[in-house]
Length: 316
Image 1: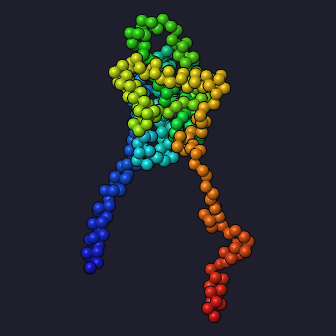
Image 2: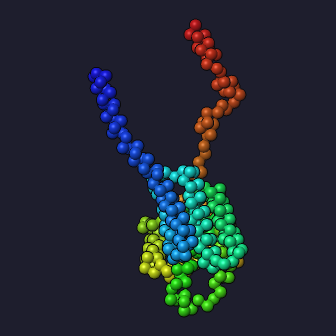
Image 3: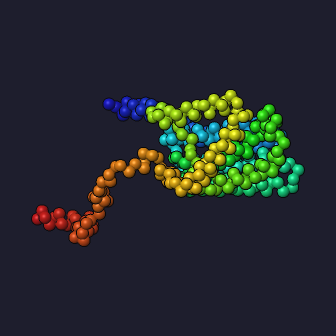
């Protein structure tokens, strides 16, 4: 084969391998694209709030939450999770579920107050602390439980309240309540729950293999149907119920002095916490190739020059 033919074949091989590199690069960018989409809708929620369009601002935060949910899923499916993606996700969540909901709260209920911005600032500060603690304690990803109320859930409570106030049910039965004061108390309680160590269950994946998984999947699909058909009625009560469920469950178990089956703050999958498997003994010296005695240490500590001299002496 001539050098020219070898060069042509090598060039054809590079041309065949190039699309794979482009595909790999596209897969890596995909989770970050979801995260930046989250940031886009979080930022536009701020713009819509300044324009007085609180309905659209609320839906933008809901869309940001959906994208925030899927960016982690996409990263796990494509095996492209990284520390960079975790940090980018936290910075994005600080805008979409920290700054944007706080701004909606201030502009909606306290537009003329001189010091109302302190309420929003306190909430944003707690949300940022919550995200930083999440990265340190759980590495940017929760397996089974969150340590404290997740910041997306807290932001959705503040953001989805206004669409709920436009429903006929609210206008007929709840409109007379002092909602500015109620929302201030709600913001304080939500902030405390975010920095607490109350375990909040993570949204489970779809599972059709076990009976419990089928029941959970059916409940998720029912919730999805309600979110699509009656979103004004569903989002705010459902997320408030999620926040109260974690709190009341912890209080109830504490009053009964009943311990859970496993510590949820360990954040382990059920398969990882299997205690039926007998531990096997491992000889770590074989794995690390460490010498067992001082004699072995002297035997293996020779330099290449001494090894050559010993080999020559043996041959002679």
